[in-house]
Length: 394
Image 1: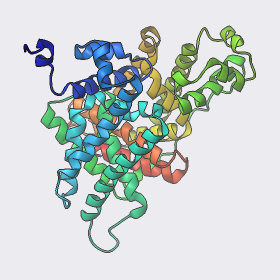
Image 2 (image 1 turned 180 degrees about the vertical axis):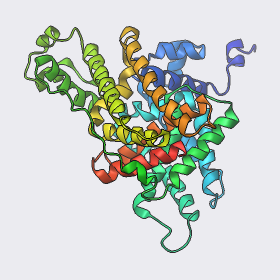
Image 3 (image 1 turned 60 degrees about the vertical axis):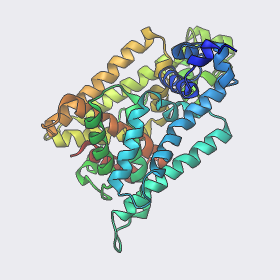
């Protein structure tokens, strides 16, 4: 009997190749925008062949979402039970770097998972947090050395710094990248309670959110929390219209389509953030003071405008290119301000390492804020600001 030449050349790890390709596409374009045909094309197979491995797009998506955290758990399981904190964090960094292109699925797109899958993902993530927490406790032996109230926050923030790698493309040589991010995560995990005390002293005056004085502004204000809660693709025009007491057809008198509401939300977020940055740098006394002021302002902005921020960060990839372009430019300008001040405060840093640390600081805010359920208070703001400053190595 003659062997099937196609079967003979089929890679044994095709399922993993599919998961990797799908993870990259889901991370880049979002769950709803990615198609099974595109994923199949990325692997070099037909859509029919893809369906032999996964019955539908959701099944593939769920496996992608779990794959990243499963990789983290597996890496930790390979370490000795008494592994030191630097070794534990370095293992997590290595896995994240290896799966960097697909890690965004866990970061934002996991909100589209069904309840059972979300629960399983939470259990897996809790295992990672628990293992890092154990290593952190071993690194601080002795009576009174443990800060149980702040331990989980610091651990989750450290994981946020590591996870930030999945949200941008700035890179370094692999070894240097792993060393930089491992050291960053270690600083965050071991930041003393009340660390970077000067950062908490910055009084933050955020720009007031626009008052919805027009029907267009009312529609935008109603849509943002719906997008944040359910994801842009899951929200209908009917839901938005109902929230403002309009017929669905009346929305088109104010916005050509739902995507234009999303674009307006992203522009509003960019504008408020720019104003916050400008105000934070007024009257600073030097580079370190400037970085601490930036951190305090960014944390305050994130806690005050949580829904708007999450929509802008999670959904920007779903915008058409012409609507996305000015927003990407605004993001780059914002990061450039941080990068400049961080390099003035730490002259030994080259541009790319500085940029990587800035993104790590943003990752700290996201995961620490989630851990605190975005409950806004001076204490929470000060704690997260201190962790951001720690991530930056000041």
